[in-house]
Image (tube, rainbow, N blue to C red):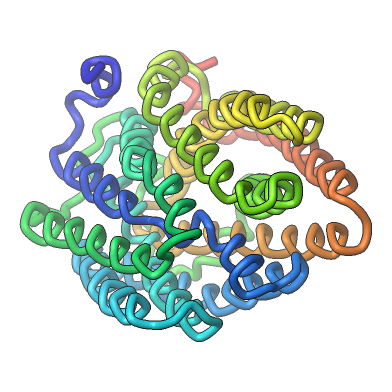
Length: 414
C-alpha cells in the first residue's frame, strides 16, 4: 500500500516531504471548518441566507489579509511567515477552547482562520519554489495528498464532537498546528528556489519586483480567463461544504451532521488512495484537459446526490465520483498558473487568485442561500450545474489560446 501511495513522489526535494508531513499534522486537527455551516445553522440558529452573509463578511476581511500574505511571501522568508502565522493561530484556538460556543467564539475562530489564510500564499509559493516545472504537478499532488491524509478521520470526529463536546475541536486544532510548526521550524532551513534547466521554465523568469501585480494580470488575457474559470469552480466546489450539509440535515435531521462527516472522510480516503495513481496516469495529459475531465465528474457527482438525496448509499457513490474530479482539478489548477507567471510574483498572484476564488464562493453562497430560503433546493442545484457547464466552456476557450501562447509546455503532452 505504501508503495502504491508514494511511488509517484520519489526524487522530489526533501523540503517538499517536510511540508507534506506538516500538512498531515495540521489537517489531522482541522475540525471546525468542515462543520462550520452546521455550527452556524444548528448551534447559532442562523438560516441559509444569514450563514452566507456571515461567510461573505469573513471573505471581505480576508481580501486585504490575503494580499498582505502574498506580498510578504514575495518579500520575506516564506518559512518564517508560516511559523509566525501558525503561532498566532495556536494561541487563539486555545482561547476558543475555554469559551462557550457563541457568536463571539466563532469570531475568535475567524481571526485564527485569517492568519491561516495569510500563510497560504507562502505555503503554495514554497511548494512551487521547491519544485521544477516538470515536477510541479507531482509536488502539488503530494501537498494535496498530505492535506487529505490528515483529514481522513477529522471530519467524522468533528461530526461526533459536534453532538457531544464541540469545544474540544478547538484544542485538537491548536495541538495539530503546533506539531506542524515545530517540524517546519526544525527541519526547513534552506528556502532557496530549485534550479530548473528545463526550457519550459522560461515562462517563469523573474521580472522587476516593482512591477504592479494587477498591471501584469490585466496585460495577460489568458490569466484573466484562468481567474474567471477558477472563480466558477470555486462557486461550484463551495456547495460541498454549504449546500450538501444543509440538504443532509433537512433530510436526516441531527444524523445529517454525522453523515456529512462520513462523506467528508470518504472524500479524504479517496484522495489518499487515488491521488498518486491519477497523477501518474495523467502525467502526459496537459492541465486544461485534466480540468475539463475533473469538472465533468464534479457535475456528475452533484447530479447523483441531487437525484438520490434520500439515499445515503448513493450519497457515498456521488462523493466518490466528485472526489475523483476534485483530484484532477487540484493537481492541475495551481501548477497551471505557476508555470505561466514570473517566480518573482508568485506569492502576490497566488494571493489574488485565492481572493478571486473566495469572493466567487461567497457570492455563490449568497445567491444560493437566497434561493434556498425563498424557493427550493432543486433550483439551487440547477444554478450550480449551470455554473459548472460554464466553466467547461471557458476551459475549451483557454485550451486553444494556451497552446499558441505557451507551446513549450505542450511538448509530449496531449
